[in-house]
Image 1: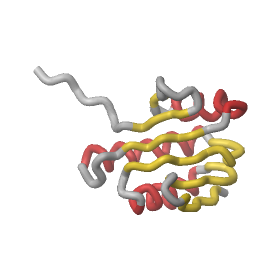
Image 2: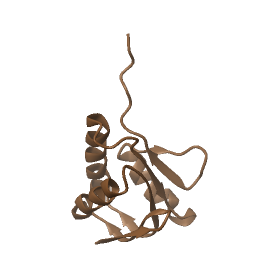
Image 3: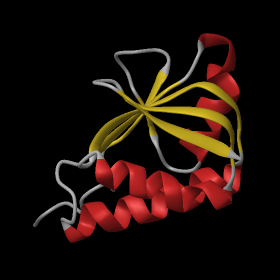
Image 4: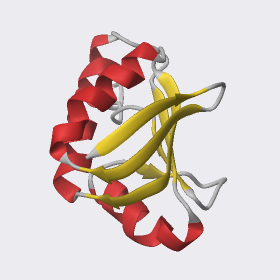
Length: 115
């Protein structure tokens, strides 16, 4: 079970295990933040692959519908957990942030080239 707490001026602080049942409440918390939010996974012990995949789907829908713009989500993880958690998020379709070694970023689905 994932505990979600607003963290003043820093985004959302998460604690526990991120499972599929936590996706709905996390999406609601992201929407309440206005779409641009940092998710602090430093206290998260595990990210279930199916939960990461389920999270990406509504984020893509919000991006494509324009429901929340800009929609950018940063996942902050601790160095010792970075490998497993970041790999799980990247396999689900999130992008590794190139500027910070302990972040994974969501910036919407890739756009089809025009032409």
